[in-house]
Length: 633
Image 1 (cartoon, rainbow, N blue to C red):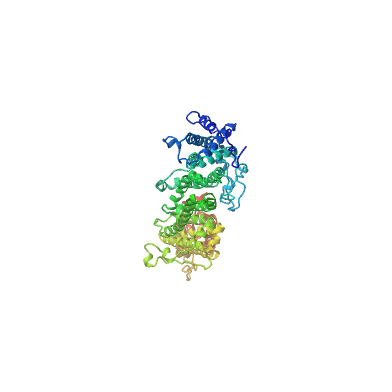
Image 2: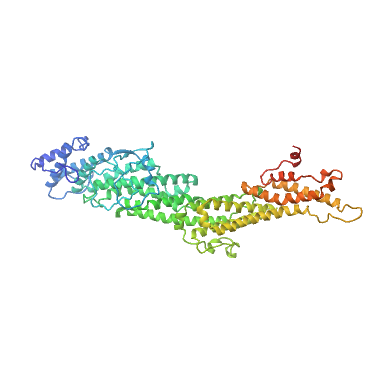
């Protein structure tokens, strides 16, 4: 027969024969036999032993001294007291043996990547059947001695525990139901006999080993704050990825399952030193502190822009896990774990805000003073625009974290702050969110920085081409990200589009006005009785000047680079629409005056088709083939 906890009914031994009970206990003295009583097989020995313990406990009138018999050297005041100490020593061994040997095996890695562990999991507080993981996908990595029986409703049911599972938690039965019944039977006798503290210590020691094994399999390392802060960023980035994966498994499977096991063994027994969940706290508190210690070290580490996205990932992970942490660490004895997680979350949020400010300052103060060859896209432009495109992917989180707009003082912190900072036009629409305001400000100061870098070019045409390339890239990146476009807004996007078109126009003026000036009629026509009405010397000089100017521009600007294919072709078309009609007209009006003289090829160097072909060399970023060789072929 079984009692309400699943253990054997404590009936009198041989009509109260105390001596028989003592003999039964001494027969299983740990000093004389190591054969397990609770072996999961024949229960007759276990039931007799428990009845003997109950009989002797009832026979002891005075309370016995609390403490492990292994630590006691005093002689027993009576045979019954001596027997109960032997019994407690034996039950302690049996308790540990069950926790070590009678556990279920499962592969922790096969549970880590369940959809239930993803950040899209529902955070409902409704209690659901424990451990429904029938959709688990298998994995070959990491076999653990811990659990296998999933979602069982057999055995002890929670009675007074306030623990309520969230939907994202997946509890595993770490110990089979028959072993749970034996553990409860033993725990009940040890607590009743005053050995509750020893029971908790043995339980915690055995389960700590299982939790430590889970941590090793999941790659959770013991790193101090100093260890973390000394790591190179590439190595730290990999550890953050591993930690995020492990943290979800630890909270939602490992710790939750340990909480369930503790409840099934100790809940409702009463008299557990420290409360019914003290064994759970003993088991996982150190591991939880180790787990969150890594995130804590990240939250207080040096802030730099490259860390933002991994810190955002950490923030989102802990934010997502916080309801589960609250559910698993719900008791007073381990509420400090939830407090630690919440404080880390707050520090990560502050780090994110600080990093965004660091980025703004870094963009404004970028020190590079060497112009990029060919006026192509500056590395700073690529970095910043790729960066804020990624920022827009975290819009949901950042809208909640970024609650203030960039202030005038924060915009111009640094050497220029005393002078009011650089003159920067910063549009601030009233309906723009603080996050959108920060991103717009970053683009504004990027453009300001690019204008300073454009001044490094000695050739004004190349300076305009550089600005055209870079502002066009900014526009292209904003248009390519729906989230970023929504944040920046179409009004400012139209301003930037007008800006790069203006730069393209300025480039054409700087380059082609002087070349087209060679094709003017002014000064060519003359009057006189012996003249054809055209000054051939002036005409020859015009052709010679045009050839020299075009040769120079062709040789130089072929090495300039417009990396965007469509923009490059549009610019060539725009040039050809101005140059080719002007040259065709000039050539048509004055060609015969040159061709009738000697060596006309010295002056009429290009046909219209030659110029058109030469324009295809422009902005390719490499030296062109000589035009004379091309015509020969």
